[in-house]
Amino acid sequence: MKKIRTVAAVVIMFFAAMAGYFVGAALQEEMGGAILFAVITGFACVIYNMDNRE
Image 1 (cartoon, helix red, strand yellow):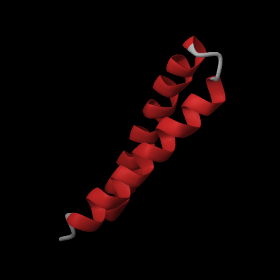
Image 2 (cartoon, one colour; image 1 turned 180 degrees about the vertical axis):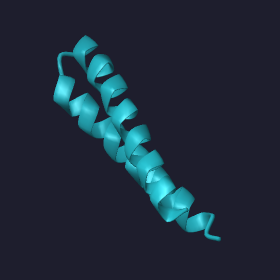
Image 3 (cartoon, one colour; image 1 turned 60 degrees about the horizontal axis):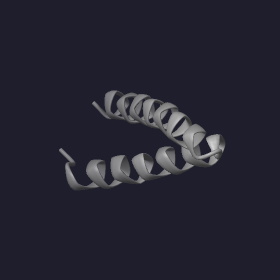
Image 4 (cartoon, helix red, strand yellow; image 1 turned 45 degrees about the vertical axis):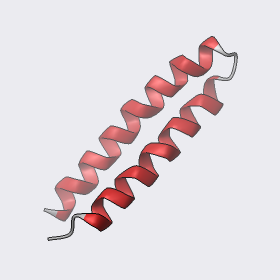
């Protein structure tokens, strides 16, 4: 189950980075937006996994 959560977190972070890239492109900061969205999503995934241990 841990591997599934890890893979899911990485996939979610990837899609958040892609969304951040496009949002950042509108503001002339593509990589900044991608990094920001990926980091925020990564922290949220870590907090969620710590809170929902089996």
